[in-house]
Structures are given as C-alpha cells and as structure tokens.
Length: 175
Image (cartoon, rainbow, N blue to C red):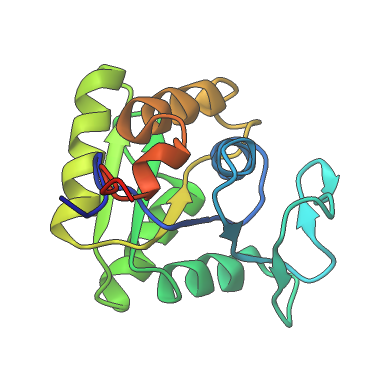
C-alpha cells in the first residue's frame, strides 16, 4: 500500500507577519519545519517594529497593510481568520472582504468554538477546498492579546506535529 498516511494538511503557511495571529502561524510553521512565507509591508513594518528576517516574507512595494493583506489572500488557496471575538473588525474584516473580491475560500473561526471544534472545521475546510497554501490571518496582539495561543491551539489540533513518517509510503516491500 502506498500513499500519504494521515490527515490533509496545507503544504505551506503564509501570513503577513504582524504580531498576534500572523506571527503565531508563522512560528508554528517554522517550529514544525513546514514551508512558510507571504507578503509583508515595505520596510517589514509591524506594530512592534521591523519584522525579523527569520520570517521568510517578501515586501510589497508599499508600506500599506492593506496591500500585504490583499496579496496574501490573492496568492493563497484559501484563508482562515482566527479571532477571539465572534465578529470581524479592522484588518480581519478587510481580509474577509479581499477573499470575497478574489473569490478565494475563507473561514472565520472564533474562540466561541472550543479548540477541538475549530480544528475540525479547519481540517474540513482545507480538505474540501484542497488548500495547499493556507493564509492564516487575524488580529494583532494589541487588539487581542491572547489570540496567538488560540491560533497555535487550533493549528496543533488541526494538523498536529509534522511527522516525517506520514510523508512516506505506509509500508515498503522487503527487498
């Protein structure tokens, strides 16, 4: 028997590098050896200063957050927006509007769901839309200080640790 063992998972995580949800998703990918990337504003602008070079992000031509947001939506197969609040506001709301404009699948998960239910919805979303490149978005740390923990919990439950054994055929024939 050959094939990939395990659940569907994105091949790459992209995000804009802002504090909070964006950075949590990038850190999660880096820690698991998953490819990561995305667009960030010119000057690697974020609310805490310049985004560190360890994040493999490309700079947009402008320093506008909106351009980075739109390009990450446009260049991914789908977007998940993770928030603590039940309603979208600010950049998270703009992200959803760009997803509609670019006809890209978009899923909003809030902490109104427990991490298990949110993870199950995210897994189904990735599988149903065949998402290889997942854009992860959400509020910055100054707006929702604990959003990073929610993002990490959902990603952990949805996709778990990257296990190299899952990436090879189930069993090789002897000899």
